[in-house]
Image 1 (cartoon, one colour):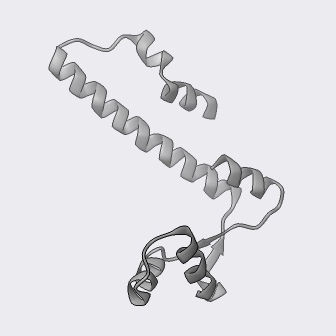
Image 2 (cartoon, helix red, strand yellow):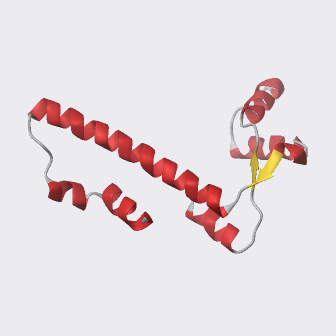
Image 3 (tube, one colour):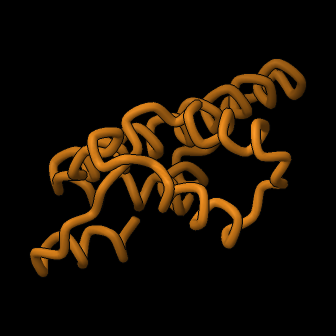
Length: 107
């Protein structure tokens, strides 16, 4: 996502497909397997009104959602570990984790 943010900050317009199911449906209708090349060809056949510009704010929100989902999975794993070992995780272990550092960088 960092590359997309850089592009948007340099005023490059990036568009997102409004309905992501549309591409899947086009693949099925045309009997095409999922690949970058096939998707690019199919995307070029879709009219412009099916796309919307992606803003920096939306991209940041998507990044936060992604981080939250990773955090939630990590939290679930820690709770399972606690249940199995009957020991709480060390605070130092949590602070050393890459995910914790990513969350602190967003603030």
